[in-house]
Image (cartoon, rainbow, N blue to C red; front, side, top):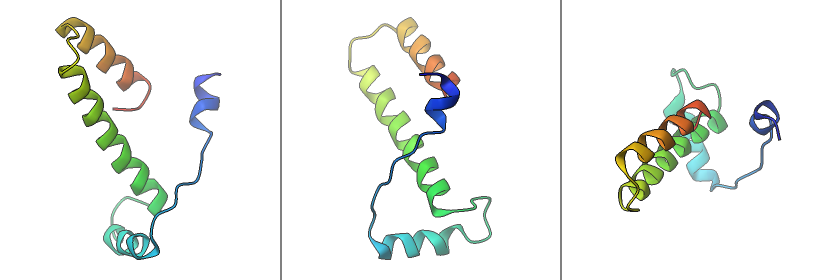
Length: 78
């Protein structure tokens, strides 16, 4: 699958309506244009942190970690 096609595919994730409404209020006046955009941003940050933590505890060399992190950045995950 090409990089462009991978980026254009989406799925639906359900969150409680009360959380959705809180996020809507939170992003008013920010650069986020939708709740989905904000949630995607937050999830990318959390996933990147978790992946980085996992790498730190996996016994992977520092050089391998740098290469993996660089790949994740080029793919837009970090």
